[in-house]
Length: 363
Image 1 (cartoon, rainbow, N blue to C red):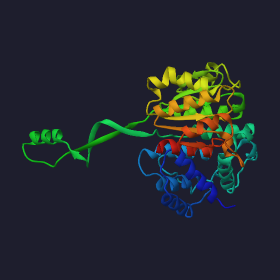
Image 2: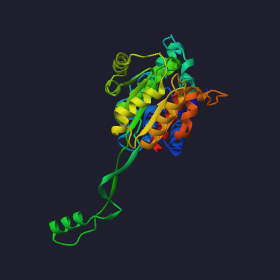
Image 3: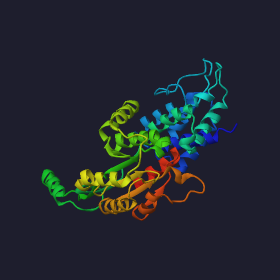
Image 4: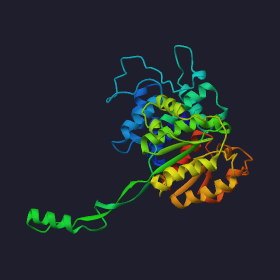
């Protein structure tokens, strides 16, 4: 069986973890793999490390992704001498239902399992089995989102830009002789991110995965997270805990309206009155996760979306049903909100959630 799809899937997982993994590096990786034995974990590990990692900060992320993609512990700092020992088999991180119960593993399992993981990335979350959902949780926890950036008011030293007279004169006084000119320009700082997650009954098949996604974003970008149903609940503090299971358990205890009704307009008004207008939404990237089924007044939702758009830098709406064939934005909430958002996105799979991270970062 051709292992290339599985190896390309591993490169995609590295991109999700924050590594660049440009097409040129992936091609170099595949070329290097042609010269190694896939049944030797050390050789496969180092083939990827020397071709897919571009800077020292990439190494911990590569190790973590390699360990999650291929079962077993990551190789050490130096490759082991395998000439005098039997060669162990590489077993990919497979779904529990597909693991081989025997003591040995065929080399082709690498391509099969990695391909299965790539397929899982594109599957609708609501259609997954319990075993597949467990594997999806591991993949979501591997996400390494980068926050969107905006210009900072304070200027920082740089190789190019405007002349920095203070640093230039300071170094000239210290040395007593002319030196090279120093420059500065505006730096970058993270832009605020706000996630509003609909936890009503119609969104219950996706609620767990979306809150786990929000946990991955909140931990690494300091995003503000709120749930909306019949009321609005802030769960940012709960989701910033390191362990995802503890964080999700704390969030579930804090949210009293799981799988209830939907009052998006009232929830959004409560968010803007208490938090958004006071600064949380100002010049932020706001993402609303909802299927748009509004039991309240659609006109109120339209007014609040217009108000949100005036405050925020960008507003995205993520509807899991938008990823299905034949979908049309006819839900009352989507209809009134559509003209106030940057883009309507599908959040029905891990791949579409990764696309959302790209859109947020570009915003």
